[in-house]
Structures are given as C-alpha cells and as structure tokens.
Image: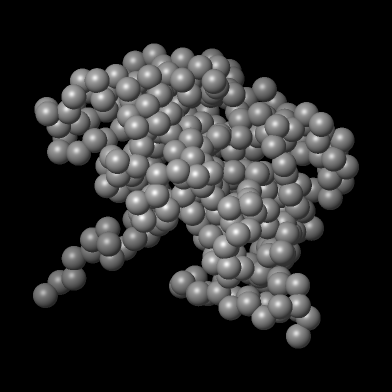
Length: 331
Ligand SMILES: [Mg+2]
C-alpha cells in the first residue's frame, strides 16, 4: 500500500520545505517566507507583513486566560515578529471564528484586549472577518514599517556575539503551572501577557547593532537553530549566562536549564551583534527598557550548536537534530 504523507509524518518544517519553493517570487519581495516577517516594497518603501493564529486547545485553554487577556496575547505574539525585524507596527486585521453559542460579551472582551495591545504599540486595527467554527480561533495579520532596514535572521557572521533580551523559560513555566491548575504568579502572568520587545528591536536595528535577529517563540535552541541556519553559522551558548527570572532560579538547576533552553512562549529577542558594535550596544543601555544579556557567540557552521557548561556535568535530553549535545569544556 502506498504510504500517504500526513502533516504528522512530514512535520511542520518538512511541509514548509516542500511548499515554499512553489511560491512565486517577485522583484518587489525583499524578504520572502522563512523569516519573522515578509518584507515587500510598497510605494517605494519596505513594508513588513506577519500573521499568527491562536487556536483554542492548541495554543491555549479557555480557562487559562480571560477573553481580554486572550485578545492582548494574540496581538502581542504578532508584534513580537515585527520587533524581531526592528520594525514599527502600523496596521492590523483580525479573523475570528467561534461557535454560535459563544457569548457576544466574550468576543467583545477579546476585542478589548486586542485594542489595548494595539494602543500600547501605537498601531490601529483596520478590519477583519468573523466566521463560525467549533472552537475559538483568532488569526491576526500585522503590517509594519522600518526606519532604517529590516533585520533578518540571515545576517550573523562567525565571531558575532549573541545577546538575548529579558529572561528565558518563564513562558513555558507559566504554561506548566496553568496545566497544574495554578492561576497566579509571575510566570503565569508572563504567559498571559507577553511583552513584545518593540522598543528593543527598534533600537538594535536603527543603531546598526543587530546583524541578525529572531524572536524566541519556540524556545531558545529551536529559534537559535533558525538564526544559525539562515546565517550559515554555528553557535556556542554559555548556559550559566542564560538570564533567568527569580521564579526560574527557585527551580532545581536542570529543570530551570531545560525551560530556559527549550521552553517556548517567551517572546524575547535573540540577536547577533558584530564585535565592533558591542561598544555601541553598551552605550545604548540607558535607553533600553529591559535587560539584554550576552549568552554566547557565533562559530563556524561545521561546529553546530554547542552548549558550554562552566565545569559542571550537565546532561540534557536530546531530541533529534543531533546538534544539541552538551560540551563540558572543564573536564
Ligand atoms: Mg518569530
């Protein structure tokens, strides 16, 4: 019997690898699929475009978030992709689908959350679409502009330093706590109300500091893998340098490390900074609205991704890919 490929067998990335070459290119497409946003030329200017969906029971449980929090979060995760290009969000449109028995007040609540996030980011929602579905489904598309040029995932070079904003692992810790029935605490709040790092992305882009950038939505290792692949480099990560919140520091060390390396839902920025621009980054620190921490550097591609531990034996669960081995330099 012929084997039928399903999404489950080819995987998200396998599917995209086959689909993307079929898309027609055009001269006014400056950055095509495969980055945080597409960049197209409109009226002579580059425009960013990104879209993201939030689906009940896939991305969230209804009792994890109030409708307002759900709305806020659904726009915030799109804004994070604009931030990763160093962009300024301008306009957005929304598709919402829900069952006929959904209280109208719930959808007004979702809308209020979206509006709050849009106001905070200085952008406007200009349209959308409503339809019927079995579960609650939200899809948002956001446009943005860049003042200088868009920062892609592909600009990192060997020797560049790697930095991350904020702290890592809190979003995933929040999800775990919600799954355990917890409804309070900093990590839960972090999941419910991600802070897209728009100002950081804009500063890093407009001062020519970030050579490559990506937002961390699927865990540091996975998103670092996207950046290194697009740039044709490898990376060394110093695990002791990974910035961790007080909530994460209270966990057993290995557990915290797993969350910081593989946890999703952080929406922090990871960027590669050429060594000659590190001084410029330090000079800008006063203007930053969150911490930014050096976590490693870019190395030749053939070295893959290495995790450096400071003289401690640490074993990490290895999941495919083969690049996430742990190197203990001291032993
Ligand atoms: Mg992204």
